[in-house]
Image 1: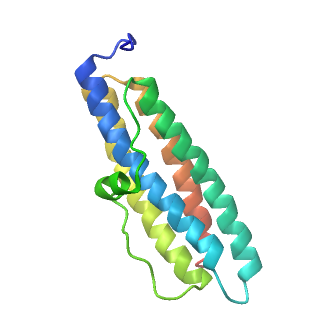
Image 2: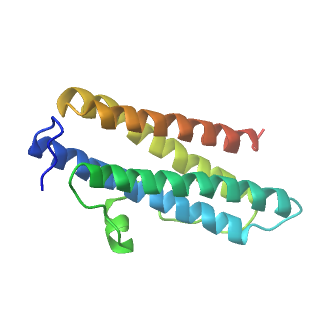
Length: 157
């Protein structure tokens, strides 16, 4: 049954597609953060291990919320690694060393890329596609990513 939520089918489809791109970015960032958690080495291992655990926990919740938002619009969330890799904006490269600073720089760059992409979609969802709910939803995500980026950036001072 099609959702009757005040957004026409074409616009819901466009929103779902854009959210699937964001979902792919979020999933790749989650995976890269999990990699940092598992593989970080160095004198600051314990603190970085716990820090990355906190970050991937937040990202896990975001991934689930984005997928559920797509479903609430009557569409299916991308749920394959191949699909995520085809849609993502996030760099697939990994740095060469497993040190905390290297992981932090890489993850910070990815968060900032995602922040920019999310910011570009806020007005698009609200003004062009008339989906104020999704616009508000991603605004909240933007704020979460800005805080996560600040936490990463603070480690580099």
